[in-house]
Image 1 (cartoon, helix red, strand yellow):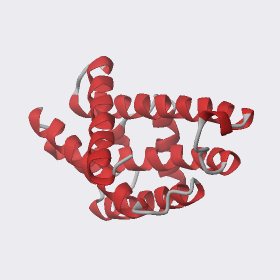
Image 2 (cartoon, one colour):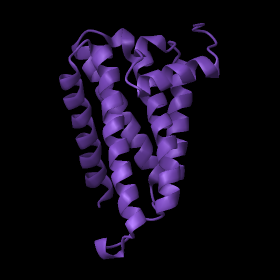
Image 3 (cartoon, one colour):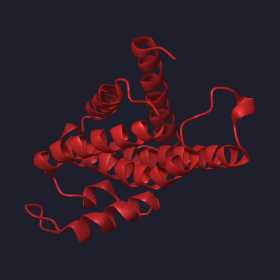
Image 4 (cartoon, one colour):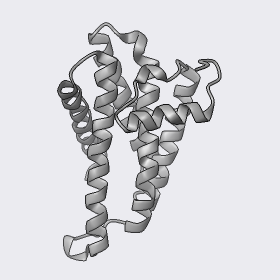
Length: 180
């Protein structure tokens, strides 16, 4: 793959393979410019999904904060293993796969609409879509664990625990800064 100018098609193939837990993050090109573009695209998509869910307050800031936390923790994990040279590719792949899975979440969010205020107000469709969203979350954690497993040369179990800890850290910091 041409690292200077990869085609959208070739990048898409790598992302799809990674989302199927089959590809390797090193198949993605090293491109700091692409990393910057992916941070912007991820934030924009998260803002769109947040708007669909009725979460318009601070959505871009919350998305960017979450991205910064995950990318910083990724850097720490790679640095601890002496593999900082893998950071740009790993960060790009984490973001690209996150965007792909968020695109799958968007129609589900559109169907579900804003979350109900109480469980009693939840429709059957919203309950089913909630379970589908939970499955997508587990899938995304698994994809990120697959990526980190390769990036830090560790077992899948360790990588899964690492990524799960990132999710918990993002949730906790979000709650501290923005409340429930």
